[in-house]
Image (cartoon, rainbow, N blue to C red; front, top):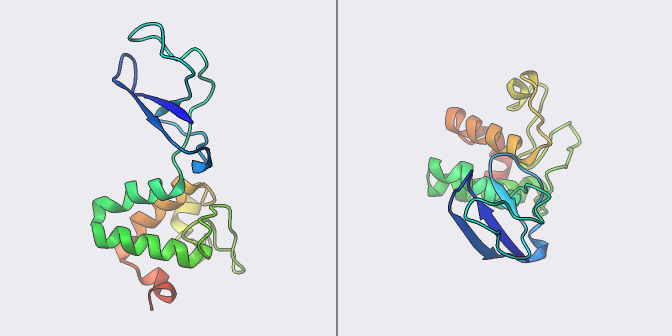
Length: 148
């Protein structure tokens, strides 16, 4: 699948190849536009562009955890693998009501302040951001069962 990346008006365009199985879907901020042919001019949009797409959850975890350090990123990957059983399914709901990739508890757990603020913890990006904020403030204690 050929994808053209555009950053803002008149921004530099890059073309890259990604397998269709990458699972790209909608996101705000970046404009990942599928193009069959190059645009007409330097600032012309792709004529076939119909959607803005999200990166896969692995890329979101990397984006928000790498700034905390390489070890924090590796731990985040291990925790998501543990919490989702290796599926990286952002729509998982645990038996006690835990939500998303990091299985944040919206009532009485690490995710409560985010749920109270109206965050959608089943949204992969919001779940990962919430988890990164919890780790930056409190460390990995909320996921001690996965870190044994």
